[in-house]
Length: 451
Image (cartoon, rainbow, N blue to C red):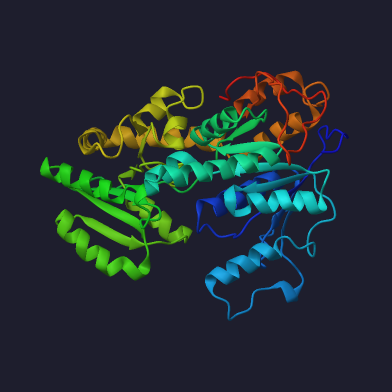
């Protein structure tokens, strides 16, 4: 990194992405974080493998490789096209002349961001954004510890090369810090809380006999807890609670077959809907929901839950195995009277515990709806995407300039502990080959674990 301090000037930020629409959580975070950077007054670039319509947001530019010779061939398979797009993003054609900060996301664009720095922007700082725990996520999904350990080592390699690691939510920030600690790597970690977008709240009718639970996400991923949600519905109906479940996120090619199967499993109490990123359709889902549930076995954060909270729908998530659950249970961030009622201190495998909590919420639904609206107000006031972007930029400034040189005032430097964890102790050891040296005289603040 350059020795010239940034001070408080606006930054030129290059966000490396693979898509613009919300087909994955990674695409959503990349897009919304870039928009937040632009809203905060920075020049935000998004480097994408193909052209997208200009969103018309000041300070935001969508860029793509401009050399047609590098573009994918229409005859390529999906795998070949993906490889071509990755290679395209390493091209110089179409990139801005200079940038201060490059942001890459997980294995999808993290390596690309680091390579772009090494090739074209040697004075730029890099932030590597972790979305999933390679250890917990891989073990929960594959049951393969060897696979999980390999993925963890790959992520540590990226964190070693980056200047700042960013964990999306408290679970991933803590997991990232632990991975660095195991390898005795003196690297800072920023904890990023995703923004909450305000949506129109439901307009409830004055009388109803049945209750609708909603679960959204990619239902072909068993980590999302689809079968467990069905088990909860069966348990509730066995108790005489007239509940039904809507599940949004089934691949369209599997929809009919899956619906027939779940009809038998649930006694026709589950409605499956195909995956969509159409905000109008998702708003209709929220309009009809009495309770949003997220019984994931493991969730790095859980954007679908905060999206529902932004619509004022009561939500219920796992406190122990999801980032959003840890966030809602953190009384320094969310008042207990707003957050505690939205978490379950039980795995989604514990059908009885989940059914008990759902039944409690449905029994006091008017009060729960009122609490959900107060939670919505708290989240959209304190956790916007612009605030998320500003937090990341402020942590980056402090890492880049150092506390002795940073133009940030002392009160703000202290407040950055809300998002930045710096190593408390230095270790005397030889840095492995390939690691970029830390800035001289820049130990960073000993702030402890971010809150």
